[in-house]
Length: 174
Image (cartoon, rainbow, N blue to C red):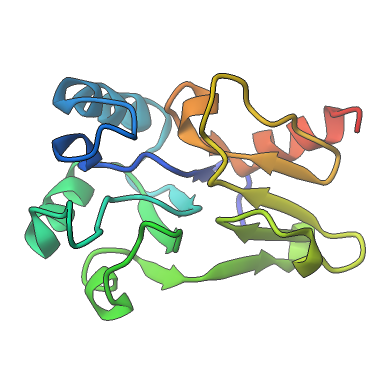
């Protein structure tokens, strides 16, 4: 795996601005966030999306599969969805649009667990965690030597490389 061409991010909650004031943003913000994404990610890069990509709750989802495919067509990269608590459509629907869909992912070569909701009980000895989900409030959770939150809000709404996520954990104090 090329760590400089593999990106991680989470919690854009694309399309959520249509019906849910809880999550930040507007149609204009979404256009800007797509541009920020594409400024970092190339067409052939891999993106490991750590949950809450698209607001798909039945009460808020107005576009369905066609809207999801349209959105993905605007984003660079081959995107693997690691499902979050707002990614509620059936896996078969997501597989029509994403490169793959999983509930969590381990990358053995760099000893990482990628999961939407942080859960240290899932960590194997020596393993580190990349997670999302924690984007409420105004201050990000601190990066530690064994974990980093990759919520887009805390990284300028841009995916970061897996190499950068690892560098930030290596540099952390706790």
